[in-house]
Length: 393
Image (tube, rainbow, N blue to C red; front, top):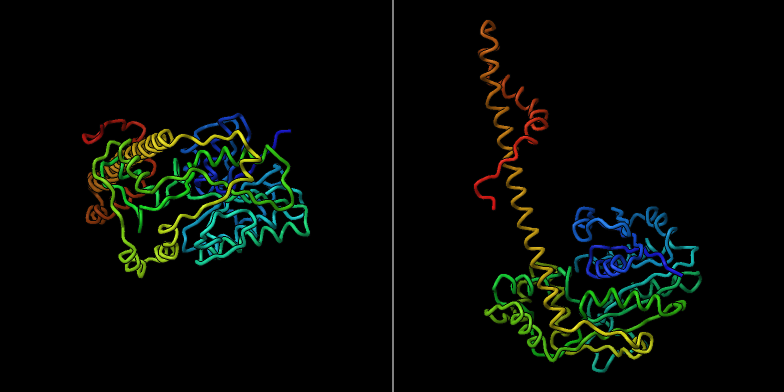
């Protein structure tokens, strides 16, 4: 039986990946987003997709959306500095909306809750967070677990390593690809010489789907996904540089400098608290996942890098186009507004030669009249102004 999905956070990295996989395979999806225009830009028009603009904190809205689906992907996110408040509030809103139902909630987890673990982390490894972000993640998982004890709600907690790829726009990975396509040095934090588990974002969507479809989810279930392990981040960065044909090399941002900057920016303080992840290899044991989905194959590294470079290149062109459009529309608006405000004083002065008071105050009356007529003038003139400005390609 086909499942119906609600994706909360449809324009984020995980939500985008899962939604994209669903609609590309002819499945229906409803996504809740904060920015409708951004969602439409990412997914275009699609008969299988329903976009709802709203907040995950609007429990009444979530309750209505939940009624129409079997499974909810809770993929909302926020800046590090707001995690402690926003994420627990979001989880609670969704749990309240699902109360009394038998919905399955999919929660994309990570490895923050295990601190600087020396051994591969299995689903039975106890939590051991050593950062505030890690403690938040553990708290969220505990909220979800507790909700399944006395209710029909089911939770599938899929923990992933670091996610990179199309629509991963955080400050760790986005600058790498933006700089690569701009011919600049590729930035990395603290240490680029440790092996790391990573996963391509578009593989994340496929994995979530496969796990949902492959088996019946128990009351509360955890599955670890290891992704691919690169020999070092330097190896991965060099490969990005080579495929982008960039010759500027790699630029490592040292921990000492990061600590100084973190005095002025709360998000960077959170990054500093995760410094251990850059200096050590945090590994998931994914035996359970491989047993559940034995035939799953990850996207080859070079293919994934090229697809990501293409995605960021396309986004760069979209941004350029939007900038040009704003400049052109601004120029047209400026022209119409100045026609209105500039010409009306002369019109009033010429039309009222017998009234001394109006002539003496023609400028004032003209400006007021011009402002009044700006809106109708725009409605009449802007559709006609199809000209190309000199700086437009």
